[in-house]
Length: 84
Image (cartoon, rainbow, N blue to C red; front, side, top):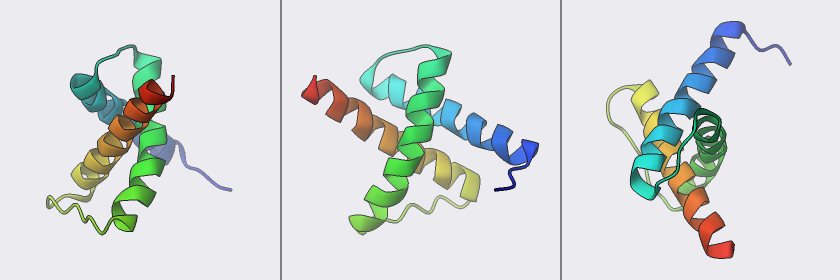
């Protein structure tokens, strides 16, 4: 696998922003938590939304990915709280 530094930084930035947006909705905090929930939310949102037939198109691919990641992070946090 060949990952560029730019791609890695972009992924972390998307995760950070998505995690921060999710924390505004469901609470929580901390830079590391934002990144982890955002990155995991990206995976969950990337599978969940298409499976539900939801398409996010806000004009810019970066914005679309942040919104999908934030939705996935919110779902993850809510499920984690319900389970625990």
